[in-house]
Length: 135
Image: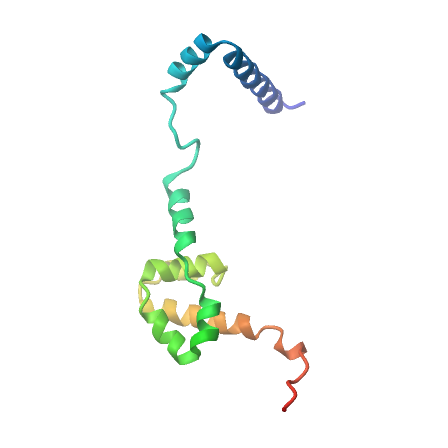
Protein backbone atom coordinates (compact mmCIF):
# COMPACT_ATOMS: atom_id res chain seq x y z
CA UNK A 1 0.00 0.00 0.00
CA UNK A 2 1.30 3.46 -0.87
CA UNK A 3 2.18 5.80 1.99
CA UNK A 4 -0.51 8.33 1.02
CA UNK A 5 -3.20 5.63 1.02
CA UNK A 6 -2.02 4.42 4.42
CA UNK A 7 -2.26 7.95 5.75
CA UNK A 8 -5.74 8.33 4.27
CA UNK A 9 -6.91 5.13 5.96
CA UNK A 10 -5.43 6.21 9.29
CA UNK A 11 -7.04 9.66 9.07
CA UNK A 12 -10.44 8.18 8.21
CA UNK A 13 -10.20 5.84 11.21
CA UNK A 14 -9.18 8.75 13.42
CA UNK A 15 -12.16 10.83 12.28
CA UNK A 16 -14.50 7.89 12.89
CA UNK A 17 -13.06 7.48 16.39
CA UNK A 18 -13.50 11.19 17.11
CA UNK A 19 -17.08 11.03 15.86
CA UNK A 20 -17.89 8.04 18.08
CA UNK A 21 -16.35 9.62 21.15
CA UNK A 22 -18.07 12.98 20.59
CA UNK A 23 -21.40 11.16 20.26
CA UNK A 24 -20.87 9.47 23.64
CA UNK A 25 -19.23 12.30 25.55
CA UNK A 26 -20.81 15.80 25.29
CA UNK A 27 -17.87 17.42 27.11
CA UNK A 28 -15.46 15.94 24.55
CA UNK A 29 -17.75 17.13 21.73
CA UNK A 30 -17.71 20.68 23.11
CA UNK A 31 -13.90 20.67 23.36
CA UNK A 32 -13.64 19.26 19.84
CA UNK A 33 -15.90 22.03 18.51
CA UNK A 34 -13.65 24.64 20.11
CA UNK A 35 -10.58 23.09 18.48
CA UNK A 36 -12.24 22.80 15.05
CA UNK A 37 -13.72 26.31 15.15
CA UNK A 38 -10.54 27.73 13.61
CA UNK A 39 -10.95 25.76 10.41
CA UNK A 40 -12.37 27.54 7.34
CA UNK A 41 -16.01 26.82 6.49
CA UNK A 42 -15.50 26.41 2.74
CA UNK A 43 -13.95 22.93 2.98
CA UNK A 44 -11.59 23.27 0.05
CA UNK A 45 -13.84 25.13 -2.37
CA UNK A 46 -12.17 28.08 -4.00
CA UNK A 47 -13.85 31.35 -4.87
CA UNK A 48 -13.61 30.49 -8.55
CA UNK A 49 -15.58 27.24 -8.18
CA UNK A 50 -18.27 29.03 -6.16
CA UNK A 51 -18.54 31.71 -8.85
CA UNK A 52 -18.95 29.12 -11.59
CA UNK A 53 -21.57 27.26 -9.57
CA UNK A 54 -23.47 30.48 -9.09
CA UNK A 55 -23.34 31.24 -12.80
CA UNK A 56 -24.58 27.75 -13.63
CA UNK A 57 -27.99 28.54 -12.17
CA UNK A 58 -28.34 31.80 -14.13
CA UNK A 59 -27.52 30.42 -17.58
CA UNK A 60 -30.48 30.80 -19.95
CA UNK A 61 -31.64 27.89 -22.11
CA UNK A 62 -30.48 28.99 -25.55
CA UNK A 63 -31.91 25.94 -27.33
CA UNK A 64 -35.44 26.66 -26.15
CA UNK A 65 -35.01 30.34 -26.95
CA UNK A 66 -33.90 29.60 -30.53
CA UNK A 67 -36.80 27.23 -31.13
CA UNK A 68 -39.27 29.71 -29.67
CA UNK A 69 -38.00 32.92 -31.28
CA UNK A 70 -36.48 31.93 -34.60
CA UNK A 71 -33.01 32.72 -35.95
CA UNK A 72 -33.25 36.51 -36.34
CA UNK A 73 -35.01 37.24 -33.07
CA UNK A 74 -32.67 34.84 -31.30
CA UNK A 75 -29.62 36.86 -32.40
CA UNK A 76 -31.27 40.10 -31.19
CA UNK A 77 -32.06 38.44 -27.87
CA UNK A 78 -28.43 37.28 -27.54
CA UNK A 79 -27.24 40.86 -28.11
CA UNK A 80 -29.29 41.95 -25.10
CA UNK A 81 -27.29 39.60 -22.83
CA UNK A 82 -24.12 40.82 -21.15
CA UNK A 83 -20.70 39.31 -21.87
CA UNK A 84 -20.41 37.31 -18.59
CA UNK A 85 -23.77 35.66 -19.31
CA UNK A 86 -22.68 34.82 -22.86
CA UNK A 87 -19.44 33.36 -21.50
CA UNK A 88 -21.44 31.28 -19.03
CA UNK A 89 -23.66 30.00 -21.86
CA UNK A 90 -20.58 29.04 -23.88
CA UNK A 91 -19.01 27.27 -20.94
CA UNK A 92 -22.17 25.50 -19.77
CA UNK A 93 -22.96 24.12 -23.23
CA UNK A 94 -19.39 23.39 -24.31
CA UNK A 95 -19.60 25.61 -27.39
CA UNK A 96 -15.86 26.42 -27.37
CA UNK A 97 -13.80 23.33 -26.52
CA UNK A 98 -10.60 24.98 -27.81
CA UNK A 99 -11.23 27.96 -25.50
CA UNK A 100 -10.43 30.54 -28.18
CA UNK A 101 -13.19 32.79 -26.88
CA UNK A 102 -11.22 33.51 -23.68
CA UNK A 103 -9.20 36.09 -25.60
CA UNK A 104 -12.23 37.90 -27.03
CA UNK A 105 -13.61 41.16 -25.77
CA UNK A 106 -16.21 42.03 -28.42
CA UNK A 107 -19.78 40.97 -27.61
CA UNK A 108 -20.59 40.35 -31.30
CA UNK A 109 -18.08 37.49 -31.46
CA UNK A 110 -19.73 35.80 -28.48
CA UNK A 111 -23.19 36.31 -30.01
CA UNK A 112 -22.08 34.79 -33.31
CA UNK A 113 -20.47 31.79 -31.59
CA UNK A 114 -23.52 31.06 -29.43
CA UNK A 115 -25.96 31.52 -32.32
CA UNK A 116 -23.98 29.34 -34.73
CA UNK A 117 -23.29 26.57 -32.25
CA UNK A 118 -26.88 26.49 -30.99
CA UNK A 119 -28.29 26.26 -34.51
CA UNK A 120 -25.75 23.59 -35.47
CA UNK A 121 -26.59 21.45 -32.45
CA UNK A 122 -30.30 21.70 -33.09
CA UNK A 123 -29.81 20.65 -36.73
CA UNK A 124 -27.54 17.76 -35.81
CA UNK A 125 -29.16 14.47 -36.69
CA UNK A 126 -31.87 15.83 -39.02
CA UNK A 127 -30.23 14.10 -41.99
CA UNK A 128 -31.18 10.75 -40.51
CA UNK A 129 -34.84 11.54 -39.84
CA UNK A 130 -37.53 10.64 -42.39
CA UNK A 131 -39.01 13.57 -44.30
CA UNK A 132 -42.16 15.15 -42.89
CA UNK A 133 -45.36 14.04 -44.62
CA UNK A 134 -47.45 16.86 -46.10
CA UNK A 135 -51.08 16.69 -45.01
